Image (tube, rainbow, N blue to C red):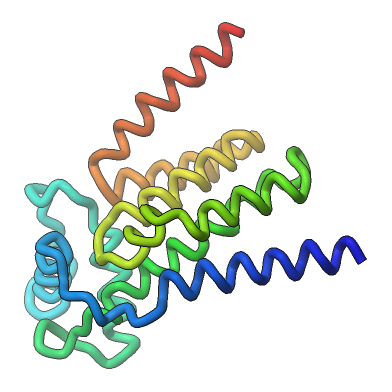
Amino acid sequence: MRRAIVIFCWILVIATGAFLRFEDLGKRPFHADEATGARITARRMESEGGRFDPKHYHGPVLHDMAALVCMARGERGWLTMTKATLRQPIAVAGTLLLLVPLLWRKRLGDAPVLLAAAFLATSPLLVYYSRMFIHEMLLTLFGMLALAMLTRGRLVAAGFLIGLMFATKESFAISMIAWTGAGVLVAIE
């Protein structure tokens, strides 16, 4: 019976989080950063192919993911792209983030990880950023997964995820500095 309740609660948390992230994604107008990202994605899809511009200060992961989703939906460029399609990969990343606490389930137990997932699912900032075509939610997902892999001793997987962070946004360096400081403090104790 307890297992069924835990599974039901997880389904409820994931469904709630997914609803908050996907409900009417195309309704709100684009933010300036979203429009810039859409234009970069369209240019890469239409004429410039996969050319990455390092002056943009963000990596190619968001634009490559968005281009794949757009092409899968038959949207081939600027004139056919929709806000909802461009925002879908971010909403997926925000929803996948809710599953990350499961990686600590054996160490922490059912109740704490379920509560963490519920907080992640309903956090106003995480919901807001999970509904925007910007890099932050991908960076958050890759970062949380990297931390989970580091705590499990899976260094190759953690390194790969840190590489994805780097390929997503230059500010991944802030996380690396913070993690290093935290690691030093943990090692001192």
